[in-house]
Image (cartoon, rainbow, N blue to C red; front, side, top):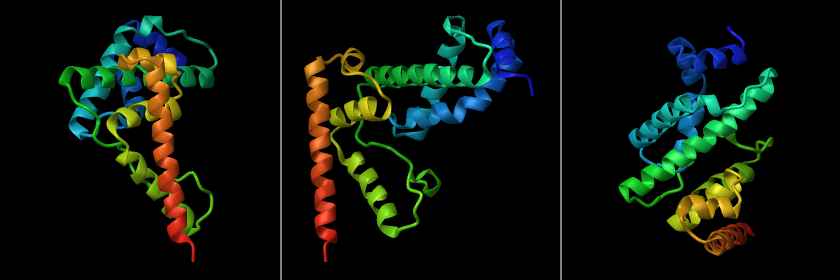
Length: 189
C-alpha cells in the first residue's frame, strides 16, 4: 500500500483512486462521529458522506507532513471537526433537536481492563444516563467532554453564549453525578 502522504498528495491532484482509499480507510471513523449527533443511521451516513465531500474540496487547506503517524492524527482531528460541523449544520437545517445521546455499547470499546460485572454494568448505566440528558445539555456535554471543544468554540457552533455553554455543561454534569450517586446508593447491601 502507498504511504499515507502519497495518498494525500494524489488526492490533492483529484486522483479519484486515492480519494477512494482515504474514504474507505476513514469512513467508519466519520460515521462514528456523526452518530454522536445524528441518531438516525441514514442521516448519519449522509452527514459522513457530506463531510467527505467538504474534506476533499478543502483538502488543499490541510497541512501535510512527512511523518505518517502525525499526518494521520492531524487528518483524524481535521476530519472530526468537519464531520461535527456538518452534523450541526444538518441539525440546524432540518430544525431537529438531538433527542438521544447515541453511543453504541460494544464490549470491545469498554474502557475497563477488568472483567468485573459491576464495571461493565456501571459503564452501560452511564451510557444510558448520557442518552437521557436534555438535548441542549447533551450537545454541550458531547462537544466539550467527548470532542474537546472550548466553551467559546461551542458557543460559536451552536449560536449560544459562552455562559449558556458553561451552564449547560454544569447542569449536565450535575444530572449525571446525581444519577451515578443514585446508582451506587441502590447497589449498597
